[in-house]
View 1 (cartoon, rainbow over the protein chains, first blue to last red):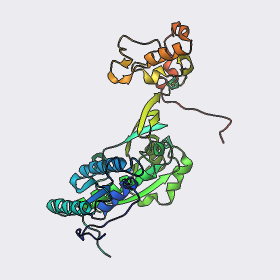
View 2: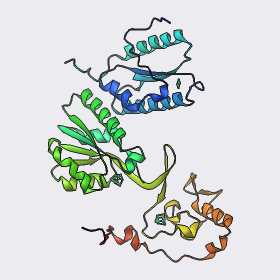
View 3: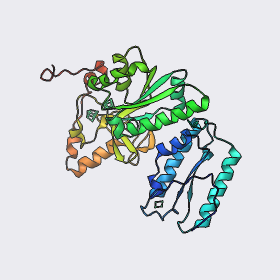
View 4: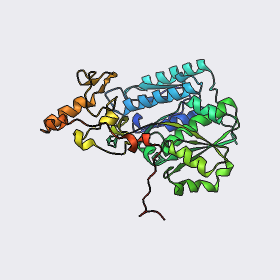
Length: 114
Length: 222
Ligand code: SF4
Ligand code: SF4
Ligand code: FES
């Protein structure tokens, strides 16, 4: 399946959204990511039952950390979509990119290339 | 285990402001088990601090380390190899940790990164409850295995008080009245008559009222 989604979105695949880690989400912000979103299966459809619910709670946790650091919590989100929904994946990628564009670059400077 | 809560990030940032090199120091004991001060939490706190440092344009460097325990000089000693590189340590062990670290390395500023809250256990993943107040003279076997000191808001030895309603404590409808539980349990065990015995005033000298406690085991001393 070939889909058009913005090239600025870097996809990291996980077996289940529940495998996402608070530390890794934060590390992406440390490295200067302007926004991060977690795409999980529809609620009730996780192959590991509650992975996507846990992912959402981790995203909520990271939102609180960002807020405490004076960074817009909207820079991280959780989206649910069915794995059969390619167009929805592309649409979320576009919409989230727009949201982040609206917020502007992250206040955390990008790591300088050595 | 000893249970604690992370301090607000804002408070920790205030502690490390102007410091050149800061060590976030975890403990593999109790605080690892209650998910507040182990290696994982060291990584999360250190990363959050690094994000803040970058954002503010500070020059602070953040290091990470986790000791086997911070309540044991043997492990604290492991810090000796490179501690002088640091200007400050944020210990996320229980309150014993920052004290032991600063006693051993008096020239370094040591900050507590968590608030130590109670001795308790986990009801489920992510939920902890207070179960013991280290009174120094355990009596739970007289109360159906339930502790009236840690779990009764008034630490009553002869409860319940008049504030017990619908099995809940008058301080908060979400708090169980432990005396209600004690009576129920003793009844179930066929031991209700034991509760007719009136307990004399508890001698609190074995608890904190006797001043800071110290325990010496001659058979173990070197
Ligand atoms: S330092 Fe505190 S948290 Fe760590 S093992 Fe000792 S008592 Fe437990
Ligand atoms: S009776 Fe004392 S030692 Fe026993 S659980 Fe209660 S507070 Fe702890
Ligand atoms: S399998 Fe768990 S979120 Fe998709």
